[in-house]
Image (cartoon, rainbow, N blue to C red; front, side):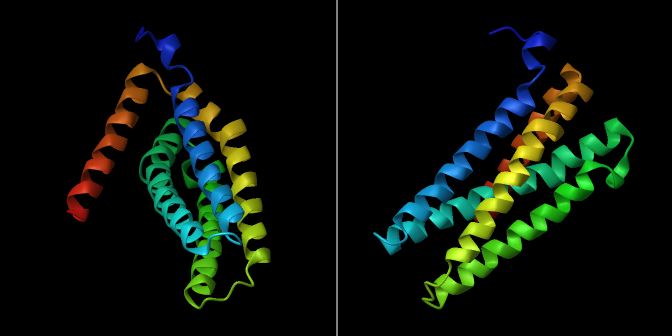
Length: 161
């Protein structure tokens, strides 16, 4: 595969769009299984939550600072909205977890709220944020972003060990 700048022009978008698809699939499996196999559904929710936490960490610790630096917008641009929506998603997940822990299965509205927030948030990132970041990044910046993402993953694996 070529490593020319053209091949990297949408790498961030492709990578994070694929991760969104993975996360949405896990969330949908949770929803589908909730009434059929609660314990398996909860397993999917746990994997979704862990994956979402990692995804948000990647964005907040790597992508957003790079975007703010390269765009010159600081935290007053699109990242302000993204941080806010991450907070809403985390609150929604916490509420669902609390109800699941209490064996309170009256969570349909909470699940629909989470699904709605996640889908709208992903649309904004996929249609606006990631393409803007891809355009702002040259080959060196894109490479540095992926190096930093890898470093974050390595930090997480040593903390968990």
